[in-house]
Image 1 (tube, rainbow, N blue to C red):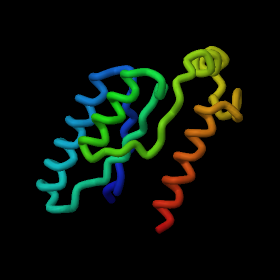
Image 2: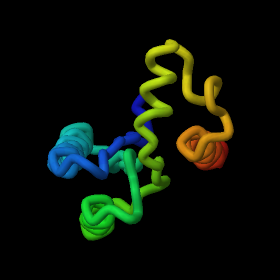
Image 3: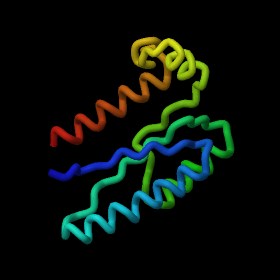
Length: 117
C-alpha cells in the first residue's frame, strides 16, 4: 500500500532545503507516472522559522511560489532543541509548552484530521 502524503521538512535557514523539496516533487511525479497513480501530496513543514529574518520570509515565499504552502511553521528555538537532544528527551516532554512543541502538536493534529477523512 502506498502512502497518500509525504511530509517534507524544509529549513528556513538552508536554501538547499528548497532544492531538496523540488527534487522530492520530481521524484514523486515520476513515481506516480510509473505506477499510473495520482501523485502523492507533499506537505511542507517549515522548520527553524523566524518571521523577523529575511531568509525565513524568502524561504516561505519560495515554497508558496512552488505551490507548497507550509502546513505549519516550526519556530527557531535552537537552545530548546539542543537541550532536549543533550538530555535525550523529546522536546514534547522536556518543554511541552514551548512554541516548537506546540507547533509540532498542531501538525500532528492536522495530519490526524486529514487521515480521518
